[in-house]
Image (cartoon, rainbow, N blue to C red; front, side):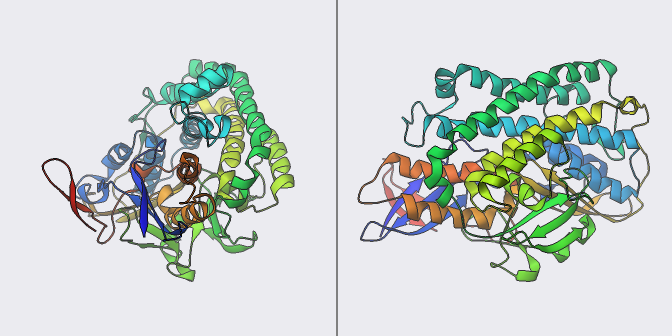
Length: 471
């Protein structure tokens, strides 16, 4: 038995490695996906006041702080038993849409486009954002501009792009400034044009990736996402839906407070990352996926015109409920277009400038749950407090964690199809890594150990020679 090690997995947020085991004939016998970092935010928040949680949990990650602040603030709203004012809800939705735009732009242009536009077998030294700039400078500028659009809106609302203190229990701490509204509306046409260009570029390249589409995690799973009563994606305040691989409804209209009935969490030896599963089907059989592909498979439509036109074409090409994880990229760009349309829709009514943006209260419940869609999938915060409001217990179920079991399975599928130990090429292992990038994992967010995590100890001599490895 031989072992190939991909360490680190590149162009992802966080740290991971993949082990690929080859049998004596050079064929892939097994694979393991290891998340090699641990953060432990849940434990060290104990004793802190609940109202500090949006600021603390945002520090889990520099990519997803807005998502954690929103999920945390909704959890605090439940502890306070208050409903934020209508303008505050819309402003939270607005900053959330901006987060989707900047995050999806980062994922597509900076992390995945080097594979999709330069090729999985291209020169590794060139297969990066600098290679994209050299190959297609106008597309690279569009990607940078799209991310800037989202970050500028976040900064205009919250005064900071990363880890702002604007999202608070009960709402937000300042209204929208008219000049920020006007500036954002003026920037929308360029953002829409950049998103359209990205999608057209991807659609033009899809025929080159028929083999990858067929073998990048094409096994059937369930899908989970939040929708409104019309079956459209509701990233901020939707109810949780589970659908099977054929699109059939498995569980519907699950509220945040009811999530423990449907989602369990397992610890796996191979990783510090927890492995959520669909409780009614048990572990490990209750595998489901979240994120852009899952949201598109769960929803009936977007409810915005441009995104719905593109969704119709997507479904004409791949069906109502496609399984390939390669299509996370396509679904992500559909959501990028929807996010831009959503921003315009929220900004248009003058009521968005209301000064009433925060409700205030103390502890009125000793437990609260908050659930939203982060760019990478469903994010759940769950806190228990004492009468003074100090955190007694906290649990975070992060988007990437939901995909843990599916990613591990898909890595095996990709490796078995593409990796040949008798005719080894670098592009084979790049495809294995690219499967992980398709999910766009945020491993810094998701590494909250539950149970005994896997630990590897390497014993080396003074000159660096490996003497013994203990798992």
